[in-house]
Length: 367
Image (tube, rainbow, N blue to C red; front, side, top):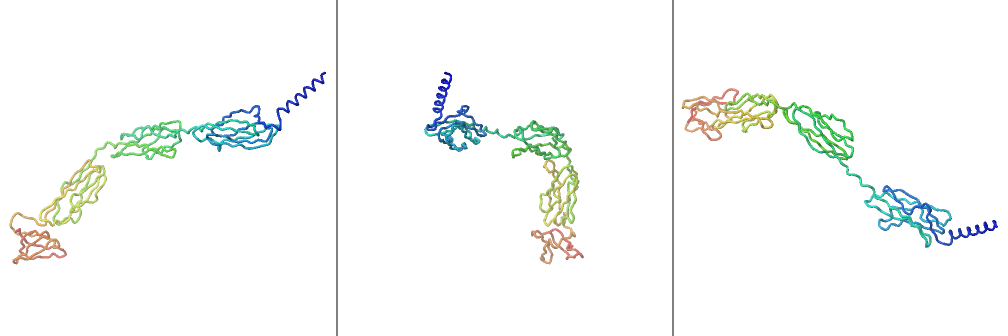
């Protein structure tokens, strides 16, 4: 009896197995532990699909909306086999801005099985930030400290472009406040310099401006008036300057020139005057000014005419350069005419040329 039961059980098991796996019938069955949906990381990756097929099969990626070029199967077809088979699916990185999905479709005749998978997009990179809360600072002449607050999420470096600015707080990427010590300004002019914060292929400037030192400014000339003869100057007239700042000097007349035209602190400049061929005396003003124009003083330059009128009709002796006068004879008398056509006077004696000189001496009186 016992042998009969065992025989009947064997027959039932045999016929049951033949019904499950029939090589003549199309059939695709996923493995018992095979998930029907798979989540793929945004960075991409691969996964396996385990299945069995009684007959020859093919596999493909089906994606209706996003296309299928971002995923591929390692084996696109195979023969039927009683054992479980595997195909590997490879998914590229999702650098789009939206989630995408597809499915692995395995087909054998009229039978099929599928495994769906989806992939989120890569997270957007945060905006790269490097900025200052303030762009500049003003400091008194006595110096002091300046704080610069930096907002950042990228590495950066700090560069100081002046030796009178010193960073006193060491920087690390966790800190956002830089402290700088500013030296005392001992000069009479303001100054400025730039601190550069460089990172992410760009540099952001921070400007430090410091006031000038408190100073007792001085600017004066040792002459207020210079008298020059009609012949002009053979050598420059020296004017001494007492100053503790930069200065410039300029003349308002072409016939009166100055040199040099600028200087610094104590110094001097020279005044050169051309010959006066005019009928009357003339005056020029030389202005000495501080470089910023805040202080100035003037030197007047007075030049005599080519002749001097004594106020009477008496005869006088005077020297004229023969290059500056024209001579005419009229009624036996010599009259002196300048190039501008003005008559200087009546001459009663002939000329006497001085040895080694281009000047002639005349006795004359105003007519």
